Image 1 (cartoon, protein in one colour):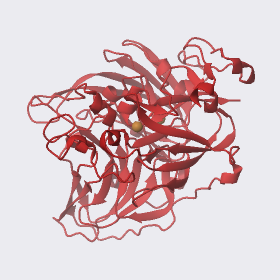
Image 2 (spheres, rainbow, N blue to C red):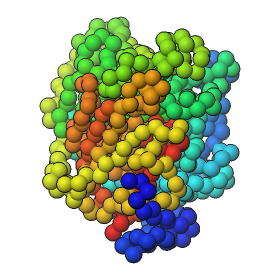
Image 3 (cartoon, protein in one colour):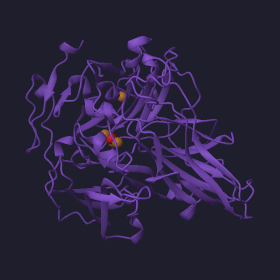
Image 4 (spheres, helix red, strand yellow):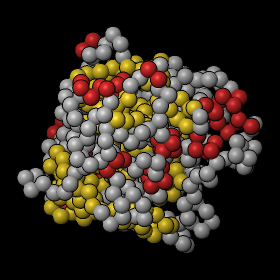
Amino acid sequence: MINRRKFLHLTGTGAAGILTSGLASIISAPDVGAATGENNKFNPDLDIDLIARESEIPIFPGKPTYAWTYRGNLIKGDHTSLIENRSSYLGPTLQVKKGQKVRIRFTNDIPEETIVHWHGLHVPAVMDGHPSYVIPRGETYTYEFEVKNRAGTYWYHPHPHGRTGPQVYGGMAGLFLVSDEADEAAGLPAGQYDIPLVIQDRSFDTDNQLMYLSGHMMEQMVGFLGDRILVNGKPDYILPVATRPYRLRLLNGSNSRIYKLAWKDGRPLTVIGTDGGLLEKPVQKRYVMLAPAERLEIWADFSTYPVDSQTALVSLPFDTNMAGGGRMRQRGMMGRRGSGMLGRENDPSNGDPFTIFKVHVKTKETERYPLPDRLVRIPRYRPEAAVNFKQPRTFRLAMQHMSGVINGRTFKMNEVADDEVVRMGTLEQWGFVNDARGMGMMGMMNQPHPMHLHGKQFQVLERQGVAHDGYIDEGWKDTVLVMPGERVRILVRFDDYPGLFLYHCHNLEHEDMGMMRNYYVRQ
Ligand code: C2O
Ligand code: CU
Ligand code: CU
């Protein structure tokens, strides 16, 4: 199959790319030139300087933690558009309105190449942070785009090839919140009652310094798993609340860790939104799986809690092989807990239970705020409207040759295969297939893959092989978790922007190993 495919090679990052394969005749030469600087015809509503630099952040008592952080400066725009917390390694939260024009001058001041990607945003290819646009220390890349997305919790992070994992882990990530009229009309808690919470796992040495992968290949196959949970960059996070509902926006900003989120007291989670904003109506779940890069908005109502009481958001234990029939945890390759695959005591594993954050009910409020039963309207795509309705594209996800592969391939900077070319303006059906391979050594090959498409929000059409109840597939998504043994079909439209975009596994270690490919939108 693979060797019958033809590959298109786009030239490097210079001027307009030139297709050099035999298929060139059916595809017009794409513009893959990098953004070259400010465009004086572009009149931004928001003008921001963003820098990535080395910092020392106080996370624990004692020695500060060396981190790489985004820091921002608002040149033009409402002062609420950029909210920075310099005591956290997380980058500033950018808050924009749908339709606003944004200019961001990004300067790299970390000791290696990087580039910024706006995760979930629908922007032109040269604004999307493709790894071919990396800049070295001392250089600036100017982004200019209009925010076309509906209201939602988006985010930004680095995207250099092979180094996304360590850079995000080192601290580089921030939220990009979009508001619009429909969201504002939904009747949800706002202002101080609308709280973003970025969930990440980290490991620290006794000197409070971040520890990343040991270099062990098996560890890379699973992805980095920390033994501590940080929320908004802080350990042991406590959320003080009043007896009233809140809108909590959760982002899983972890490299590889998946959470099975639930309230500690067993109340159901009331989910109101996902990656691309609000759902049509609230959904109740006992627990929700949240994979790296996914977002979840919940309505958290503490009005029935006594003042001074506590609860917590927790991650329940789970087995990543749940759908594959295998009983083993990933660490279980060599046996039980305590004799992990790396031969260390208590290796962290995907599926470990955690307290994510505690909630302290502090103040009494008597006013009542009802949960709206309708939130926004979401027009559903019809599968028959997909141009490939009869022959959906299938992407097989696997661990092979000590790497993650998509249809047997790994990432090549400017390469796109002919089954990765789509036509602009069309709706397509894509399928992700994560076949389970059983137990023993092969059990290691059963990895969860949170699959992400750049530049698009899609709808989940169908899931097969699911052994649990923790998915929110109703809304707009840009990342979808595909557990071992699962198959997911999505509907996605390729509108507005031609060119080269990425799709990849958002387990950042898998991505860095090459479990990433380009897709090309032709006109
Ligand atoms: Cu969060 Cu390639 O993206
Ligand atoms: Cu993305
Ligand atoms: Cu993966």
